[in-house]
Amino acid sequence: MTRVFVYGTLKRHGANHAFLAGQKFLGVARTAPGFALFSLGDYPGLVPWPADRNGITGEVWSVDTACLAQLDQLEGTAEGLYRRALIALLAPFQPSTVETYFYLRSIEGRPRIGSNWSV
Image (cartoon, rainbow, N blue to C red; front, side, top):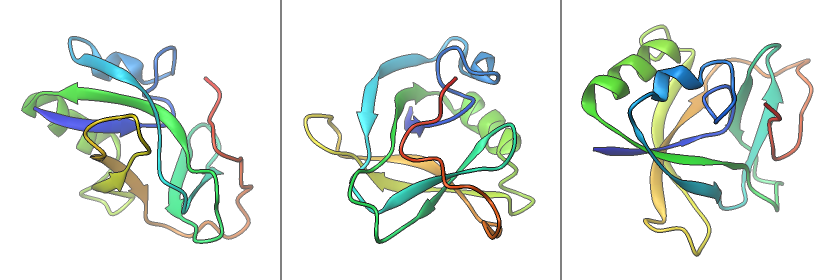
């Protein structure tokens, strides 16, 4: 099982939440500071943002190997749209490091949307 931090359309009530069907919700969490969300239209992109002091709010899910492969496909990891990598979460959430999807393309001209994507 892999623990994944989701922050956009995969969250409960999000447009792509069905991809997490049958997986285990572990709780709401916030990342350590240093990240920002940008609107990419119908979904957000998380990028490193050193000036951030708040972190990003999202959910942590425990997913099986089959689900993780589906998420990688949804997030376009093979096409270089997102990269799945480790991210630090703030206490009291444990474990303090889980995986998430980082947006890899340009954010130029994209609006920064703060620390939470509303679903």
